[in-house]
Every structure is written in C-alpha cells, then in structure tokens.
Length: 147
Ligand code: CUA
Image (cartoon, rainbow, N blue to C red; front, side, top):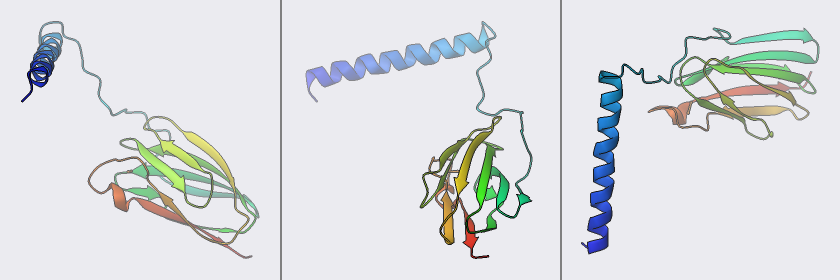
C-alpha cells in the first residue's frame, strides 16, 4: 500500500473513532436524543378512490413496505385524477410510467399531483426510491378504460 493511501486511511479511521465517540458522549452524558426516521403523524390511514363526477377522481395513495394502497384502480379515459400520496413507514418513490408524474411518499406529509389520462391502457406505478429488501416488487396499476 502506498504511503499516501496509508495516511488517508489512518486519518479516516481516526475521524470515524472521534465521530462515534462524540455520538456516544452526546447520548450518554449530554442526554441528546438522536432523531428517528419515523413519525407518528399519519395524514390518512388507508388508500381510497373517491369519484366526484363522471370524469373527476381523487385517489388517496398510501405507500408502505412494500406495496401501494389501492393496488389497482380503474378509471375512464379522459378522466382527471387528483392524487394525494403519503407513506406509513419510510420514504418511497411514486412514478406513473408513461406520464410525467413522479412524487415522493413522505411519512407524516402529503404530496399532490393532478394527472389527466387521455390514452386507454394499463399505467404501472413503481417505487423508485430504495426502501428495503422487497423494494423491487413495490408496484400498483391504474387501468384506463374506454367508457
Ligand atoms: Cu418503496 Cu422502494
């Protein structure tokens, strides 16, 4: 190993020890609480499809490890959909393939998008933010049908 590499490794190791010691000191002696990634806030607790008129829909999406609720939704072609999205656990992604809709599902908060579906077909929704061991199977679908 090169001398410069050894020096960089020593400095990095030393900084790691100092950082860990500072965290342990802060928690044990200064009684500083470490932040957690989970919130107890829950804007809504289940997924829901609300139909206002023949072509106006509102969908409340709940993201969770590792699915979306509701998992399948059928709407008529030409419908305008207001999407409200939250997460019950960790950060998730929410992308409707074939559209420009791309949101983050954030615990404790609601994100919003309005989508207009002009073309019939099956629109797959995928999670695009790594969220755990089964991230790759996290998906849902909006089926846009002729009426
Ligand atoms: Cu949810 Cu990745």
